[in-house]
Image (cartoon, rainbow, N blue to C red; front, top):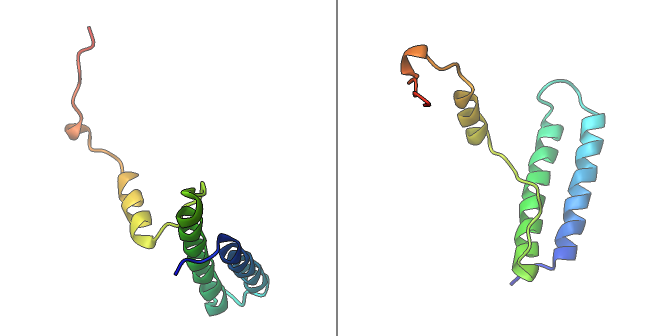
Length: 91
């Protein structure tokens, strides 16, 4: 059973509004209400993206990143050892 993209969009909008409420009432670093709202936005977005694709073969320009991808990106930012570099002669 597929979900109507408009219904999924309404759920996403509601999740974003709840995230704003939680963020504005944050009670310190790692507030569980903010974290729960964060994950609710991510889940609602994925449902919307799937519904949009199923109904119209269309996607948004947005992407949800998980922590594993962020950690892999951090590894790519590390300095390269000069011994690992190769000089290419461009004549």
